[in-house]
Image (cartoon, rainbow, N blue to C red; front, side, top):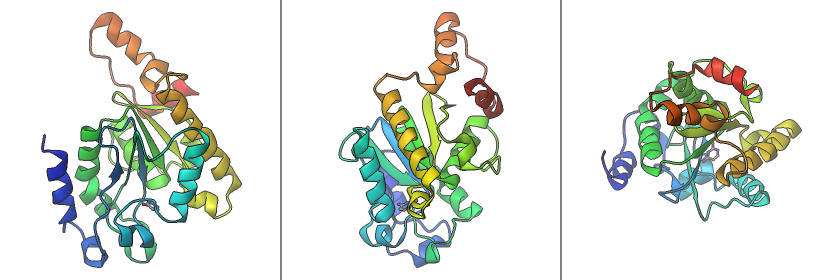
Length: 228
Ligand code: URA
């Protein structure tokens, strides 16, 4: 595996997609390179593009506040990044080919940081990483975030917790705000061992220990049913 520094340097000079043309700088990610918790958002906005750091605008301030309520802080044990590392023009949605071009950087960040818990903020990150749970193509379902928010999915050994994007709460969506609160608490509880990880909840961890056999992968749909 290439070093984290190498991956970052490669990303900082990336021209794999059209977003390179309009960016001020690449917003690779920040935080503890050995974090237990990774947040994956959508894309850098105006402030992030200027500062080179994810979630420094209003959505980031709300995220920081909500994290603080459950004892989490971006200052320790947390890594934050996005599905795409460059700001889309006028903050438009990232396009499927842009997300696909940026995919190896997120995969590398997950492999290097190796967090136990991954919280996806909003539809783009949620659909992308649920694609890894199902083993299917990226964006396998047009799944509404509200229907998967607050569940634990086994992303290999990691627990994936989808939730709303803080920007949805800032737009006045009260459900998004209460789900974010609930789901960040769930993330903190999984990290603290107060709540089982997804693999434990699905019986994957015990089965692996008992048989020492590879546990057959469950589809995302099966996982959804098991967690209901
Ligand atoms: N919204 C995101 O999805 N990511 C950021 O970094 C900032 C706002």
